[in-house]
Image (cartoon, rainbow, N blue to C red; front, side, top):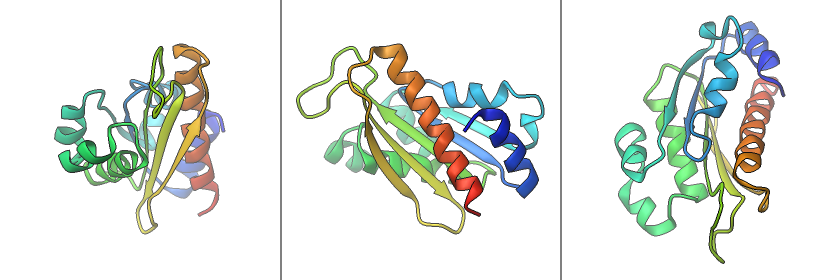
Length: 157
């Protein structure tokens, strides 16, 4: 879903959004705030590129990072819930992944984990394997997927 439609739907149903981004470095927040009138529904964005930032700003547990690594659904889950808990939003999306270049056999380039937290609903997570598309393309694909997740959440009220 495009950012303009997201803003319109969120405004219509009275939902405020927050983002927690790692590998996208604020691209979802930028896409949303590019839209005039987004201040009515966009509360804040957290860019938590380092593990320390994930812990300090979002409350991600060191034990979770140690056990699963930053690129995991477990961390995406805690990031999304942290964004919800550290904001005035009712809906939050999180992104953590390996944009590349590089990666490993266990965590390849293009693997991105997403979290979606919404007040009164269970937090959902998923992993998408975008593949080795190149850094810019993985980041853009992750941004677009996060916007789609927000759109799905807003249209299934």
